[in-house]
Image 1 (cartoon, rainbow over the protein chains, first blue to last red):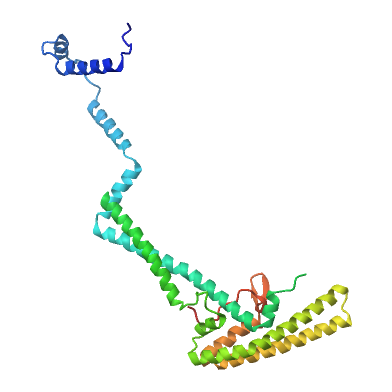
Image 2: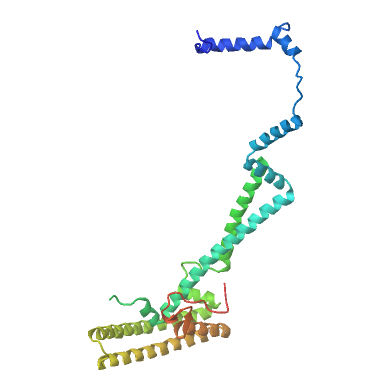
Length: 136
Length: 169
């Protein structure tokens, strides 16, 4: 039977659990343990090795943070200050008020123009004649 | 994060409410001009700030003038129709066409005379300053040609009438 042959799920699960248990309860007098204990690294690491390792760790940690998270964090920071939170709300209120006002301005101007035309139409026969020419 | 969401939501909600307030406020300032229920005389009342007695007088003048205006309108239509027929029947100005053109000019002069009589009466029924403003506006809209950009037009036939000067809502 090959090393990599699959066992039925129940058997494999049981064996994995047993192996993990074996590792946790590795006997102190195990030869492998002794060998690892006696192992010494005699080669010096390359210069600034530790600094390079930390830089790589830092870079990878930074890459994991999305721009949205950064934006959310800085917004939270800003809006946590009452001055900025009030300014934000005040700005939106003013913008909403102005937008509503100018939208209604359009409506008023349109209606006013329609009423002006209606009045002129009612008093000027040529206005009426020009507005409703006979069909060819 | 919860606090951030709350503040963002509060701001947006506030903006929506402010939008509604701004909209209603502007309509309120316009004093009902935008209302579709307003007729042309109602507009005149608001535009020229007429009191109730002034408005009642103008309503009466308007009601008296309208049948004459309609009669004139019918005459204009009739002479134009006749002129169209004559113009289509030939390729030169015949004595009949000259006569019809002359009639059309007479009707136009009579019509404009009657119209300006009415305008003067209406302006006299208004407060003096408003009356002057009204006269200037109706003259501009019904008689005097105005030039816009590259083309030109007389306002007597324009669909969109300019606003009277000197007063904006």
